[in-house]
Length: 212
Image 1: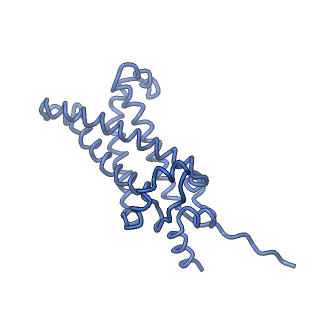
Image 2 (image 1 turned 60 degrees about the vertical axis):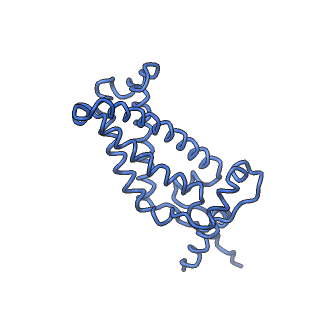
Image 3 (image 1 turned 180 degrees about the horizontal axis):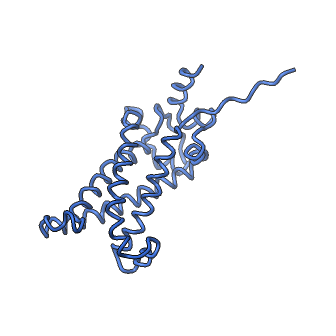
């Protein structure tokens, strides 16, 4: 007598997507810590993690440009999956009840829910503003040719966007931890069929119909 084989897991993130995601994550941590050291003397101790303040000041802007390039190469591949559709409005309307587990789950049509899509589009804007404001402050290459007022304004924008990104990443990490199986999807690349059917039923049906 033979037993039925267990359902095969579903590929959610390819190897290249996972490598890029974690490269962006590591670069973000390095930028955040080095940025804190330059933002306020209280956090200056983090410069020791980079071998000293001098090297950290040189590294930060170059790392920021590399971070932006890798992020946009990665993000542009996910453009179609993150387009907002009519069904996302229902998710956004019940977002806080969904996150607090006080309401019923809202059906999700695509690969990502509305919260993930909002995170995607907000980071597209925030990282662009960080990149532009950072370039305008970049000594000795660009800052000397920028007016004092614009440079000061860039400082404010850079700090504000860094804070917005910090909050956004915090929410992103919390949501990934809170949604059981999400972290596994970004480390191993696959999710169970039950997980996909529960959290992303629309995407699950697309995968199921396209599977042999």
